[in-house]
Image (cartoon, rainbow over all chains, first blue to last red; front, side, top):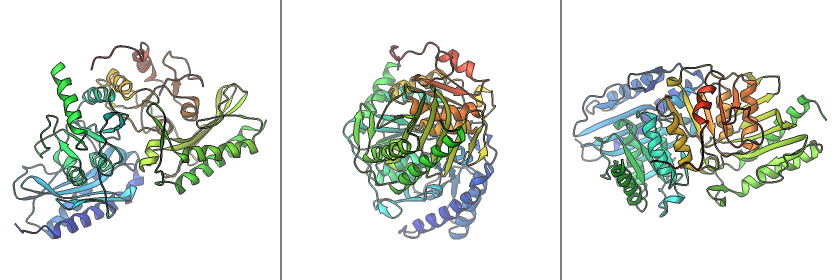
Amino acid sequence: MPESLDEYPMIAAKTAQLAGDFLMRDFDKRPELSFREDRHGTILQDRASDEIYRDVLKKEMSQVPVYSEENQSGLEDGLVWVVDSLDGTSNYQMGLPLFSTQICLLRDREPVVSVIYCPALRQIYTAEKDRGAFLNGKRIFAGNVDDIAKAALVQGKGLANINKTAWYLALFGRYVRTVRILGGCTGIDLALLASGSCEMTLNLNSKPYDFAPGVLLAREAGAVVANLKGDPWTVADDSMVAAGPILMPKILEIIRQASTNV
Amino acid sequence: MKTLEEYAAIAREAARRAGSFLIENYGSVKEWTCKEEGHYMSEIDKQCNDLYEDFLRRETPEAALYTEEGEQVLESELVWAVDPIDGSTNYRIGLPLFVTQICLLHKGEPVVAVVNSPILKMEYTAQKGGGSFLNGKRIAVNGLAELKKILLMVDKGHATAADAGDVLKLFGRQVHTARMWGSVGFELAALAAGKINALVGLKMSAFDYAPGALLIREAGGGVMNFSGSDWAAKDIDLVASNHDLLPFFLAKLKGWNYDNARIP
């Protein structure tokens, strides 16, 4: 394994841009949505953009395995690419620009390089461990409000039954200023947090490739990303809550109290 | 009085001018103030509102104005209902889910509507009896009647986020999925175009609902208050869907009460 990760961000950005350009070419086609067994909607472009990543990454660095929607064999130690070639499929399918193509490099299961490319919004978010988070090349920072009443919550829907999402929404709705559910685009949810456009995100029952790129971005922008018990989020966690460091203890306390009351 | 076609042309022109203004100022909102609990506005909202008012007073002195940030007269034969920026928070943070919208009410009934999404370049138009259109192409509501496949939109309006969560809990086990985009005009237009299946809106005004209500009716859908009557300009709560799904939503919302004790 190389000591330096210098060439990886470039490869990640280049591949994401290729995939993003492909997605934009098909954006007006309104492809038919079909549903997988786990209720997740999928379209032709999911697989086709995934193949772009596989082809390019294999050519550029064949020694690094790729973990994605199309190949979910074990997340090993060492270097692994985690790819979500189309995050926000249902938005893409209905012509809504809230989707991204995203990639993250894990080193020993920890996110170290991220690219979240939102071609329809003309935004590319990038992050490297200990080197900060960026939007179109400009450094970004998460907000750090001290009062949850000032917070906007962007909640993902994940693969959970919408009733579970509703439970958390009704719980935090008592505290926060406002709520959005943008729809299965975890990368964008976390990018909004990382750029200070919302103050809290919560996502239930998703996959490592949904989370990993945005988790590094949010952390590098100064936010805290945890599982619902309050431990730092790892690729083994299927749910996630993220906010600024001052707000986070309050959020975890609300979850703890509500869970003991059930 | 002018013809409906003439009013429709005026409405489109007003919304296009507002849309250009909003594109020019996109990403420039720095200062915003809390208008009332949980609701924010910026100088841009006010300026955009003025654009509409100046234009409409000049072009249609016969019509009263019911605008979000200015004159609010609803009791008149002819009223323009205007929301200069529907989805102000999204606009402020650079999320393109917002619209500028206008609707002509004749004796309280929506007869001309324009919902303009300037960043996404979507112009929805409708005229009573003449159908609904997106960028000039006819649109229709989605006919899907299978509850377990539908996408439900909830818009909390001036209600609390907790209210929205409670609405979602009423339907969470039956529907496929849910969204909260935070711009009811954009959401109702998406419903008219068949992209989403149902919408529940809480505590909003005629300028929020009226344009989308006409779009949906002209696209073959139904728009009602929680008691099951056709939505009227005074109704603050709204449910919209195709006519097959509406009875299900009405049955669930019948006992809806904002003051009910809630169990988390």
